[in-house]
Length: 465
Image (cartoon, rainbow, N blue to C red; front, side, top):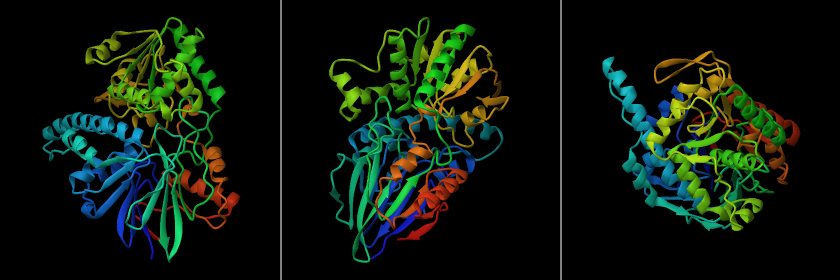
């Protein structure tokens, strides 16, 4: 008996997480994510699958971020009728995130098709629509952390908390290879320790095959205290300069983390004069899901919630639920902190706020998360003088801050610390979910310090275990 793993995403790239495992009794995927960022990658979202979706029995989903989950509606549309296993918070978040992704894409496709029509080019079709997004949810099944589930096809699975976002998981898969039980561990996206809301990643001690992410495999984050000082400094400077602060933030986890931090700053009278606006329908819906799933918070925050303390509410915080509330923010010239999605500035309401504030020297843009190659956010943090938004060239004159300490991903030090708990001496390691340079660098560090056999797979590569 053997198992073959094919790396159909997140191999020498940080997006499109998708691993096909084929055993003698069936096929399963770990994650089924959408590609984001560079056009040569995003084009893959539209390509025909080179496998039969009807033959796939399970999708084991590490978490709800679209680069890990976002092609599931298309998979179902093309004939998948198995089960999608994940934690309850992941299920809840996917329900809103798929609908949002379908909505955002429909707007983008409509805008691009107007240009293509004028140019005489063939029109584009969306990856999936709202009906597909809703239909696929019937195949989801929630599984609790730390419970072993037999898939009845030669695999058993267990989920452990990855500490990345609410409901995020490390996946342990058990199967027989050459008549011996072997364990495959997929790290998913590993979180930073000591986050405001989320628990720390669980520690594992054994695996025969480890698939570990490398988003920050070649970098270190700033310390949490240093990051919070810089965050406060950016706010104080904007207050002095009479400008606005724009925070592009992922709707799930990062927005809630930022709200929690701003709530604490409010209590210390460090937001005097500011109003805080959360302008993202998805972030607002996600915050409601967080509140409904507080039992998954870390002990400190969970106990506060049980005492009636809401980490997502304070007097100067406004949730912009209506489109007219969002448009009204365009008229604000100072003392507004606007938290909006998408986190990489590729779609959503954040583009409007950048259009109205990015060119103003008195304003500040605070990036708190990873910016993939090819995204508007990446261009801004790398220092371009202007970016195109809605076809218009916008000068970059605002102060730009990049605060790595807010990241929901472990840095190289954090990844190595998590890896250090493994006691298996002959573990084979696959470094995935990182841009090529970072993945290769992290693989070298693992070889030097841990002496494991390490592979950095190519996109599309098949490996027989």
